[in-house]
Structure formats: C-alpha cells, structure tokens
Image 1 (cartoon, rainbow, N blue to C red):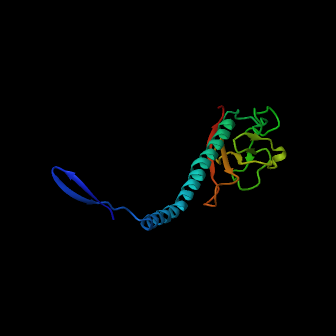
Image 2 (image 1 turned 90 degrees about the vertical axis):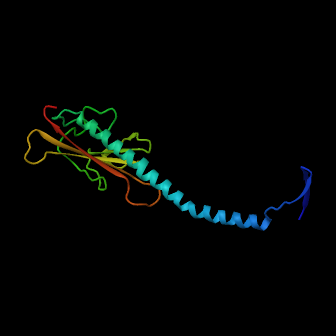
Image 3 (image 1 turned 180 degrees about the horizontal axis):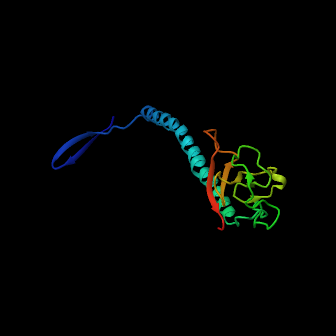
Length: 183
C-alpha cells in the first residue's frame, strides 16, 4: 500500500490509494458476461417476431390488397382478362368469372393463382404449377353471394412460403370486397 503526504494549508495529510484487484475485475466481468448471454435469446425472439409478424405479415397483406385492387378494376362481366401476368393480358385468364379458392394452403385452382418472388415480382407459372423460387402465393375466389343479383364477392388470400424460425403459423392475409354491376 502506498501512502502519500499532501501538504496544503500548512498541515500534512496522509492519503491512501486503493483500487480493484485483477481477481475482483475478473469476477465482475464474469457476472456481466452471464447476464449478457442470458439476454441473447430475448434478442433472437424479438428479431424473429419482428421479421415474421412485422415485415412478412405486412407484405402478404400488401400483395393480397394489390391483387384485390387489380381484380376490382376489371369490368363486372369480364371473363377473359389474365391477371396472372403483368401487365394483364386481354385474353387467356378468367377475369371475374365465378370460381377459384380462398385457401392458399391447398393447391391453387388453375388461372386463380399467381406467385411472387421474395421482392414481390410476379413469376410466370404456366398451368398454375408453383415455379421454383416463389416466396409469396396469392389465390383468389370469385363468388356470387346467395340471394343477391348483380353482385360478386372477390376474396384474395396470400401466404408466404417460409418464415424466420419456427414460431407459429406462416404469415397469411385474406381480403374481401364486393363488386356490383355496372361498376
């Protein structure tokens, strides 16, 4: 231990300097390391949840809404427009013909399904066969609600092919709107 004599104001004072030993520092750092390691799983869960419930849920909802708006822009009696390609083709599709499915977990009904890559770019899928590299799948159903005339219900559902981690269900979204004639 070192003692210093400090002279000030006409009198001598002795002071001691003390610090932490290497053993104390190592012990404190080991406690800090244990706390930090115990927080890592919380960070992983937060990142996974943000990606799945934030980003992917938002994307499937956006892509389902995009398809719904595209279908609603068609004429009520259109039964030929192919919305599976961009820009939509005047022939080769179903337009707003009654049919399709609103369950993306089942195989898509031909001409009522399309696929997007991870960036949201439309991928051609001849015959409704899932193309390699698809990340988002959209299916749609056109139906006529019972007891109504000149009214069609358009339902679009979208799902993602994979998610980060294995928490819960795959992100999916379903949107529905009614289309009336002459609009």
